[in-house]
Length: 203
Image 1: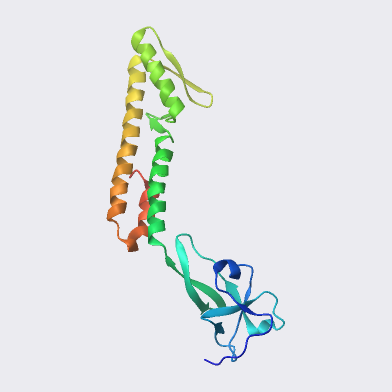
Image 2: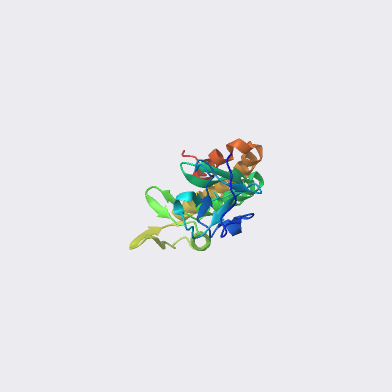
């Protein structure tokens, strides 16, 4: 590789933080490749002769770390590799948060939307208990904006059971996905993310 001494304002970048504000990398003498010093491109912020420099793309995807630099389509580009432990930890956390999202996201029963957040579950339990102790009680239940339905003991009990089974299914799915994550090969973790986001398979 043909080389030359770096220009006076150039300095080698040794960390991602140092390279972030910089936007150009020095070319080799024949303008065909990256000029390297100590194994790193030489970066500048305001080259006097822009034709002697490559633009820089130092973006690093989530769960990756930089392994080096390469010239890609005329751009000095950071090469990266996945941080597998970080990706596994993030997926494990996402499984739990996705369970909570689905658990509290509501369900539909016979065309009626039923809220499943913690407050709604508590109110439903109170209404069912009241109806169980007072056979004449009928709950005026809000099923949505401007939508009210009258529910007796049998109907309230049915809703309460449906919500219970929904919540149980969500926790069972969280346990199942956690086991699947542990058994998933490193190379398949990216594809597994879609399974986590889908969470509950369609019936």
